[in-house]
Image 1 (cartoon, rainbow, N blue to C red):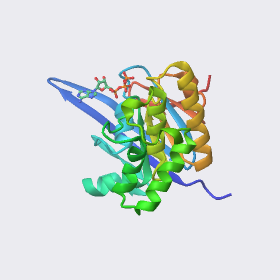
Image 2 (image 1 turned 60 degrees about the vertical axis):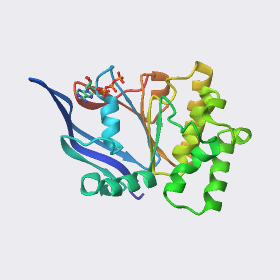
Image 3 (image 1 turned 120 degrees about the vertical axis):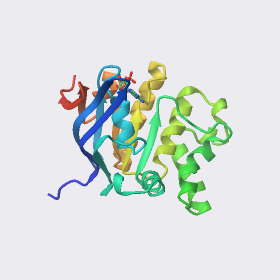
Length: 231
Ligand SMILES: Nc1ncnc2c1ncn2[C@@H]1O[C@H](COP(=O)(O)OP(=O)(O)OP(=O)(O)O)[C@@H](O)[C@H]1O
């Protein structure tokens, strides 16, 4: 059997902050590999560095030492523009609060990454519609975020994250702002889309129900990342 393709990795990743006389080492020499289609949860106490790690993996922040490789490219070798393009092509993001653009419709929000990538008009229009249909919102394409429910907004955010058919999607508490019924629906949707599109997920969460639905759970504690058993 051929080796699964590695989509995202980091090695000897360190992130430290100097605050006055104190030096805080949030992440200490973290090694991590994510393979195509693999779903991973990162859990840990508040302040353990989960969002810091996710931001480094997503190229939104720079490490103090060590490096991140996305789709075979070390992020540190790239200019800001090149890094932005690589991220738009290979990575989707979903946050606790959807971060949809308020003045645009659901359809337009899903189209944004594809417009940035300069896909042809006919292709991005059609693909955005198909994704909104997949997340059960074909009847809400023209609604602005303020005209959608919390669960619906999060489903639009997921559709937008999948628009470029990325190799991986990074999620920070994707269901943290939803009631339990909506959280359940969004989690089920995330898993079925990941299977269907063979997309890898890294999910940062406090929710062990969500974490346990992933293939692997890692615990971030005292700056170290280690495998954590399900359950
Ligand atoms: N810019 C900064 N300067 C100094 N310290 C920072 C900075 N950003 C984050 N930290 C510290 O890094 C640590 C990790 O923060 P981070 O937000 O990654 O934690 P987290 O595990 O995601 O927490 P939570 O679950 O509460 O969201 C915290 O102790 C925080 O105070």
